[in-house]
Image (cartoon, rainbow, N blue to C red):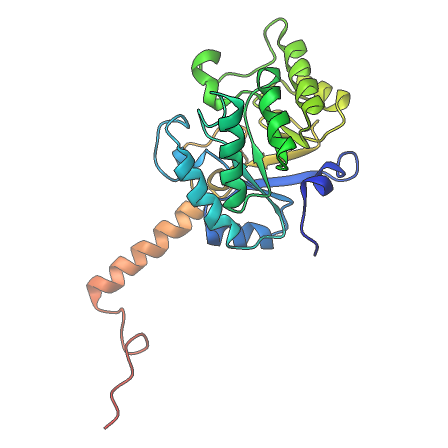
Length: 267
């Protein structure tokens, strides 16, 4: 199958729902790509589900470059989107373009940054440099301190209009898609209807053009997933059982045995 590009993903709006999932390493990228996802997000969520950090604020450009490189080595058909971490684009436009370029050089087909119209100039400059940009509005985890925690967005007066303004500003700046996170479903659906680029939701209901989930949440590897993340498997249980059997066989002497030992030396 042909490689999914930002342009192809944009054309999926109104034609086919977009399936996006995170991946952070070579083998997980291969697996999700073989499963048929349209896009792979190398998300800064790796801070919590891979590095054990309490939030995304401590994730660095070096973290994102290393994990983007690992995913890109799988040569996926899916579009690879690299997340721009906290303070990699907020300071000024030049730094935003340079850091987006680092992710592109690492193998990302596009980059994603959080924020609305206040960062439209960053989006415009990155796109002008030749790098496709995915927006991210609603709950923006890098700004959870300002938002007052990880709360549902769109309930307070004026928030729906603000989200629409953000989406329209990002569209005008040149994004090819917008993630809408943890937002009142009616608001997310309204934004989706009003803009021309596809919306990809996480915890924002079914009215968007696609969905994205974190790899560890949908596979049951995260013991405390968000309420909106459907668990499609319990891999934590499968892995735990497999490792427990290994421990038991090592202690009993059943493993490695002759089958998994080097062949006897020929005389």
